[in-house]
Image (cartoon, rainbow, N blue to C red; front, side, top):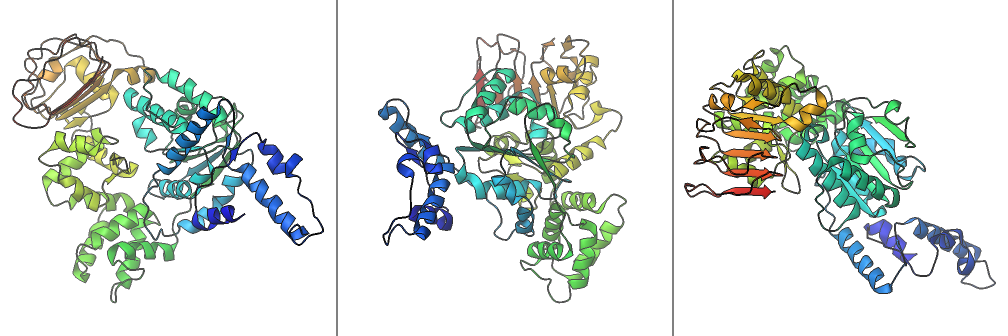
Length: 543
């Protein structure tokens, strides 16, 4: 009982090990665990009830049951404890405004029998992901293994990113070394098998389509004691689950009320829960634009904190009033516009269009000498870095960045500075519509073929030859015919999964290339460029 008390009071790890004992006998007080009241000072009715409750609690904990040789079982115990201790919590602010009250709304889900899924729905920036992280940090000791997949909607748009998501989920569920499986469908089968036996806690962040759910989890039965949280900007309907044996509890997250909103704004603007003297009226005016959205409140507070003078606050709030768009979008755009340098804004757009989910150090090398601005973007809540060093960006901010690029040429994607939509990139390459303005282009032909019928796979390098400023090129399973002689000499990043040739074209300029990734390619010979200008060179090959 003392061990269980320590578990509750100090959040310590408890791993029951059942040697030649059935956990059901422990929980149901059968056989040698049939405790009864006796005529002694120790086994009073009160003490017996305490022990029964403790045994029931132990039986419900995720533990290990002896099976097979004891030497292998001991190794399993060591591996399990190692994986538990290796767990990394998410960093969350000390004072999470309004989080405790929202957690109370759904706290019962963890102990609800026969309900595997909790869907947290709401608008972007409303705190869905933060709430999921809060629950994750509070619940991890009760499960065999944990997994948290972020920004799924955006990362599912490319075949290689989808495969990475699946591999991460499978490795998290099973623990141990990384597994590389070449096919999405194969990984789905492996995940289905693992979910039937493992008691796991999974968070799938930013799911917008039920097909994403099927790809990641499959359709088969899930361990009854597992819990899976989904966050989504769309209202998840019962149709997502009706063809399966899964049950889902739905929760629409509440936006912050006025008191909570004021507290969060002041926390970022004044490092206090209350406004500085003389600022209360302006602070209340600022709340009007944020509409209770935590992300907008945090960003506006950080923006106003740059100059805690009444004239600056008045000027900033007046600029918000002039905009026709919603207050939230206006706040996000204002934070972008007030970045100190144009290079900061260009870096933000590069990351929003091409580098979300990529390793920070990897991106810094590709985009140097502007990499220092990543800290500037992070300080202004325009970007964040995950515990495993991945660049992350809120979906509202990413969509704002992409919309800024769209506005450069609404009807003519080829005249924009960046093209990331598969359909737009495909049209540019098939029609040879490249232009001098294009700095980055991405095309995942495998993913495009799952979205729309692809009429022709006969793509030419002609369009690339017209992109004199091209720096970033990301192609997945794209076959290009033609000469590479006139491809931009400014090319810094070449990511070409499934590259179809056996050698790198000799006429491709690689003088400024910093990173090249030719995973799943047909390359038989690879020679690094002769001149590298004394910079680090990232190379990834998987043939």
